[in-house]
Image 1 (cartoon, rainbow, N blue to C red):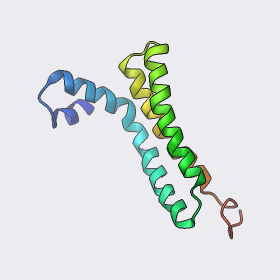
Image 2: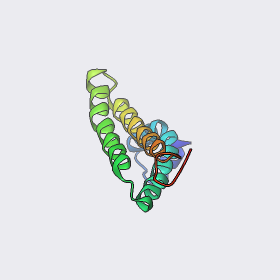
Image 3: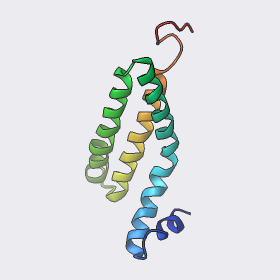
Image 4: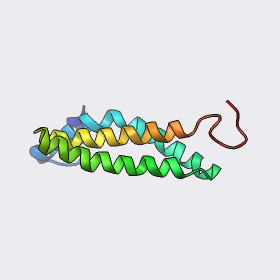
Amino acid sequence: MPLRFAQLFTGDAAVAAIAASALGFTGPAFGGFGLGMAMYFASMGAGRMRWPVVAALSRIGLAVGGGWWLANGAGLGLAGHFIGMALGITAYGALTASSVRPGVWPGRSG
């Protein structure tokens, strides 16, 4: 399925194969990104932005640092970069969602 989707945007078989590989690793993590964005805006409305900003920085750190290490240190090549991106997206969603829970915000009990 990722290959067919990638072929909608390019006729170059090599580019489509790389895009399909990227989607194969990162596609399942996009649900976490959506959750993270929803909770980011909820936190913004509540005026509680510390942990969502930490989550965003962790996403960048894992995608860049983790992707680099997995690609070069662990020898996974391009797949390592894609795994790093997926881990960063997943961490963003998990950290942001965990910061929005009853008992953490003022006026809420849990």
